[in-house]
Length: 200
Image (cartoon, rainbow, N blue to C red):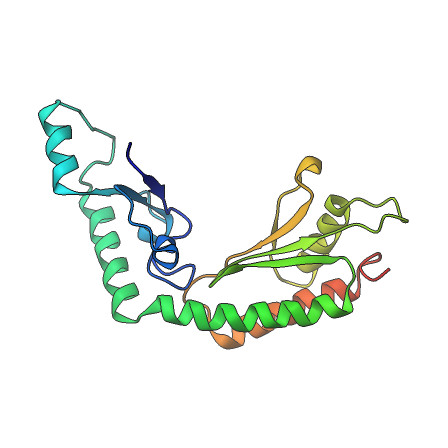
């Protein structure tokens, strides 16, 4: 049985390591990458061992797609890999992620609607919980906070489905500056402070 890991969102420095599986001491048989790899362009890759590739070739597996071997996307992917490696962006994501997490934990002491703060590097989750006495769901409260953030100039990502509760997905660009990061967190805190129901 083969272990296949999809690091479309977690790969290339996002979680504070070059690949998320490194922290857990796991080595996949097959690894897939995209998103950060393409810097916004449609590019993805599959990485495997020479042994697995040989079996695939021997069995005649066929791979094709519209953009296979597209030179523009390939050049962008190569440059992205070079920059992430050269600038050790995984270490920066680890350091900045620790700062963000600490700030969110501080906010948690002031706003009772903040449940869990979780994640690694620059991939964090901020859980919104509801006040059982108010009758306002976490999803509704999270949407109100998200809307207030947008009013203040910050786009926040929260799933707006009732059955999924309310969790902000915090995944800023790996190239975000400390000043931009601090400004975003200040807006987020301002949104919490000015949204009804955040502190029961």
